[in-house]
Amino acid sequence: MIKRTISTLLLASAMMITIVGCSNSATEEDTTEIEEASDSDPDNTHELTDDAFLYNGNKISILNDAAITLGYLGDYDADKSSTGSDYKNYLFDNGKIDFATNVIDGKEAPVDIGIFSPDIKTSRDVGVGSTKDEITGAYGDPDTKTDDGLIYTIEYQFDTYNITFRFDDTKAKVDMVLYTNSYYHSKTAFS
Image 1 (cartoon, rainbow, N blue to C red):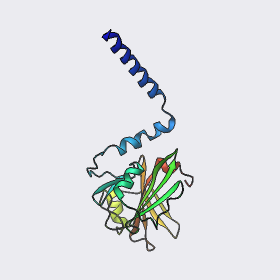
Image 2 (image 1 turned 45 degrees about the vertical axis):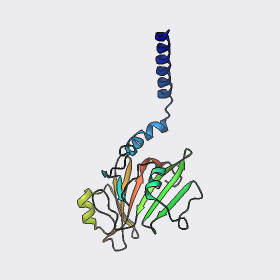
Image 3 (image 1 turned 30 degrees about the vertical axis):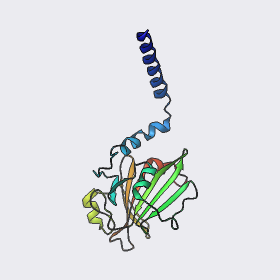
């Protein structure tokens, strides 16, 4: 009797695994790499990778779940933020950080994190106030450049995210660092 019960439980477990394994949609498969990356540092141990930076002692990654990032960033400036629609824009620390999310498939997802403070550095120790030579010294030649006369940027593209460095009017120093989650950005209405 016990053997029959155990056999039945094992068979039922195997069937459930098969059913769950076969029910993945293309969207879930596409996000597997992003979910694995966001779970790679569950204790927030601060081993910085290129997708992350430190802020108030927390590792902030563009690949983290939006709720995790919001928790690590702390209280946002409610009067300066726009959170009343599917596209949300949270401002932190008097505009030092700008975190944009979008509700995608019923879930708030990270789209962009903009850094405007020289106190916050990338994993390669560059950021706002750095020169183009310092950026290329840290990251190498950029994947893309934009220079339309008003805005000058250089961008580095990784598998699931991009880092863009925007320069000031004189093109001498970085005035914004933008981390973009490629997967979720491609799913937004404005991409």
